[in-house]
Image (cartoon, rainbow, N blue to C red; front, side, top):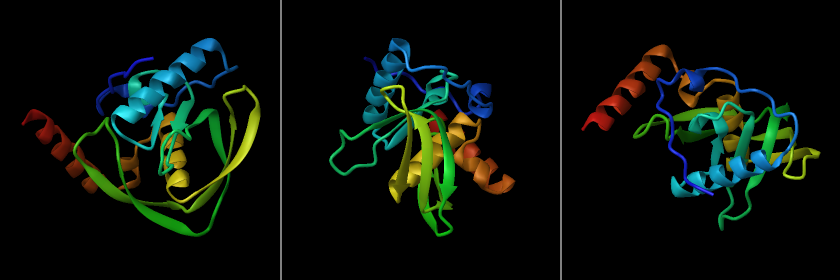
Length: 166
């Protein structure tokens, strides 16, 4: 298990869809373990494999108060989203130093391959739902700034670059 480096915002891999996972293998489990170590080191409440340069549809999420309740997901997809919305400040280690309020459905039902390689449908609410949707965006080649106006996105990207230089 290891903490992996994040790829920068300009890396094309962050802006293209990841490949589906055929089965939960020992390699997938090792990647998940590294992703959990990397997420905890941030610290953060979720991580998608493309953020560390692995173009597989893998994500981990742990929005629990005590930590240690991580959900491992392969090929997650939203089956149902609530009509009620929730706004939350989102950020990404791929675009360090900046954040923006993003509005997403407050609750979602997600289907994914779980750690046992079985199809699971699970409901997520609040911060869990926000994080799951944020990770699925990454798997689809989108980042939270893609939900913003082009001008606001450009300003945040420039601000992040400036912060990294100083």
